[in-house]
Length: 206
Length: 59
Image 1: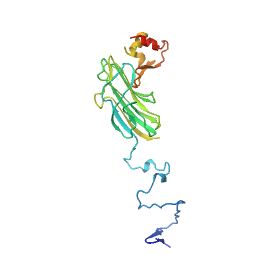
Image 2: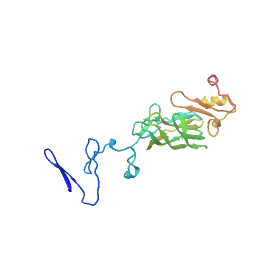
Image 3: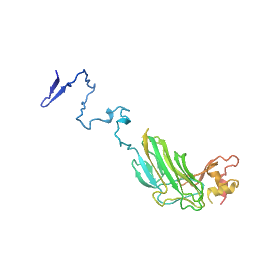
Image 4: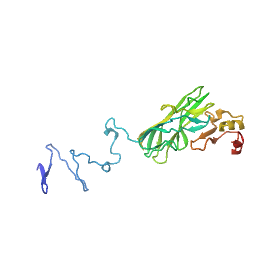
């Protein structure tokens, strides 16, 4: 027998046919109630049908990238600081905040709700500080300095930047940008979008 | 008078270098929460941390 035909109660029929090639193969039906998916179906594979870890990197099309949280914010007005004091940079204007995880009004921190490894970048520009001689920039995690970036230590120094990857647990962990300026009158420059800023995004889920 | 200026006045042997690397035995901090500048860390090997009374008395 080359095929089995099942006739519908009212109309139509399904034909189960063996391929016209040599070899013995077994088609085992699933031990659960549901529909069998064919190559002609679309939109029928659900998240629950995919085993954990079943989709590997080599099965992804080129150009596929993460849709995890990404944010960017900058200081939109000069922030006066005290010379020699590590001060949180209050980046108050958002450029983008895809998952509403950056607080630009109260705590000025990025606290993602997705666990994973985040690229975080920032810069502090102290142009406008008088007789400036030092500017440093750091990423802080949970209120503690995590990675220090640029440490410019010369007369009329202007910009320090930092870039790092940090694990954030998706609930309580957060990062902030801190800077330090040594000058007779010290400030973080917020004149333009590119002077003093912080941004970041998820690069790898936990 | 700023907090660093008060500390330098109370402990004249200190300099701004004590607040920044590579020494950084003292860390002054401002978390932007209204508390203002404060001494977050004092690890100087010989000098005592100024008390709130000392800092408050100097102008």
